[in-house]
Length: 188
Image 1 (cartoon, rainbow, N blue to C red):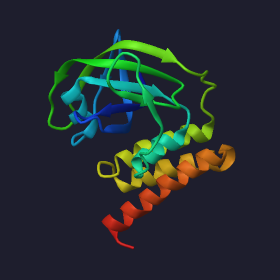
Image 2 (image 1 turned 45 degrees about the vertical axis):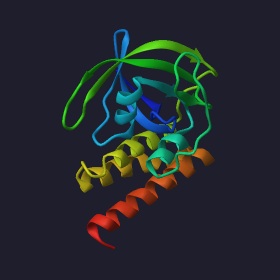
Image 3 (image 1 turned 90 degrees about the vertical axis):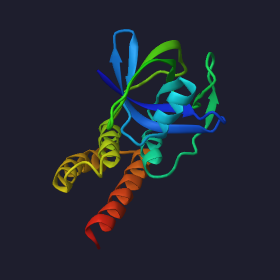
Image 4 (image 1 turned 30 degrees about the vertical axis):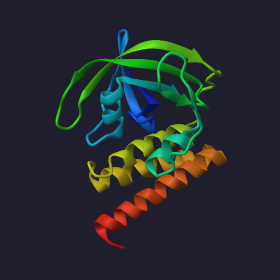
């Protein structure tokens, strides 16, 4: 199973980093698989700790992918790494094993503490659509343009029908990122 989360890490100097990431659940471990290059990867290898945050504000997912990374943080309880202040829940993890790979290394992490801060009511269709669009944006340089356009057309309908202000804002950030990328790669 893959959970769409926000992973927080920090470098050795204490500078935090916030990144959306699909985290794989494996028995009693969480598997983080960042694509290279990755500040999350660098930070986790340097400090050997991270926080996996569950949240329902899709602006954070979209924001991190569009240069908006200034989200409120709070101290974790058992490790020296911040958590997302608005997380519904968070899991503090330590790095147990590292499997190197030129494209996508595997970081096997052991949970050491979990806390629930607020109930999760579930995602509406627009929130789901924004998460799917965020995944597409994170892979703009890896996916064919036709696939991106096809999937966005499907997700756009859900945003138009069910989005609230937060989902619309997140969607607009992602669409601007896609337009900018397309102009840079394909011209005006």
